[in-house]
Length: 258
Image 1: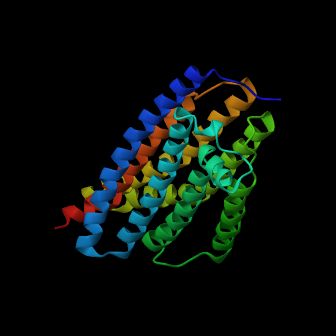
Image 2 (image 1 turned 60 degrees about the vertical axis):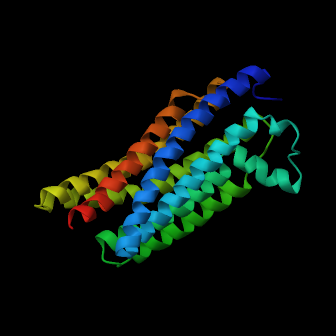
């Protein structure tokens, strides 16, 4: 039994709004990506390269999400079979699964960045193995455990995928927030205090992004909401704030040193 059905005009309208909304997010992130790349090309700093790679992956995640809205607006989901080789990837784009896979990789690179930035490259072995094992489990789940039918069970699988990604995000960015706050309290230079505060804001926002996506899917599952909830829009606002925080927390202070 289908969870809900939408008339074509309503479905297209809802996804058109999401398409425009995510286009704005993509443009903002691309601008920041260009600024990060220019700084890396100038300094060739390893940590800047990690940050650049992280934001490429995040932007790919946003791009795949944007493509899913475009597919619905163009009604491509009515002509692509779910059990064809092309449909296997097509519907994983539509259901945000490829986006989540890109973000899982970005989260792991964020873990490496955190260790290099705050721990001088020293890894806590227990935490390292937990991160690797949970990251692999989450990546496998979000990519393989999926049904393309619009049923309650399919939405439940999507909700679990968002929950796992949220937990993985928290495993990295909660310690990132703690270290940033600790550095903010101890450093004396005003520009670096602002930088560590920006990194702390970035960390909280990244955690809340997927918490909001999880709540969005949970409400759709429980209340049979045919579209996007306010949590969806809040998640993308947080993505912009997080990306801006990363730029002002790491790239901008380096520029001010010159």
